Length: 144
Image: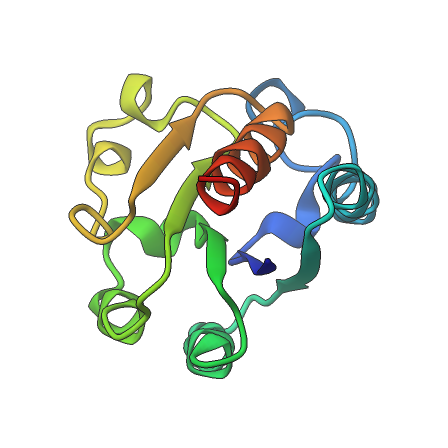
């Protein structure tokens, strides 16, 4: 199973931005961990991150026909980017939405996700472990 893990705006600041919400590790630490978890599960993973909304849309377009599943954390774009939602709509595989912090327990505006109805699963508030859980969810779908 080929999985694109797409991280969005400000996730390159992991370890430097509000560690109480997002943890103390860097984006590189996160990606290294994701690749290790993927190997354990015999999954093929490609991690990508950008702070540019248009580039994130391009990542989603590139996934069409090239990825079997997606793990997406668009960051703040989750709450307002209809362009990202539109780019996700044609994707036919499972989509797992992941957020390091518990967005449902934070500010009101963070509780809205424009991905609602597109993501097959949503994992929030589990920190880095949320990505492991996302890979487990996708591996279980593969094994059915």
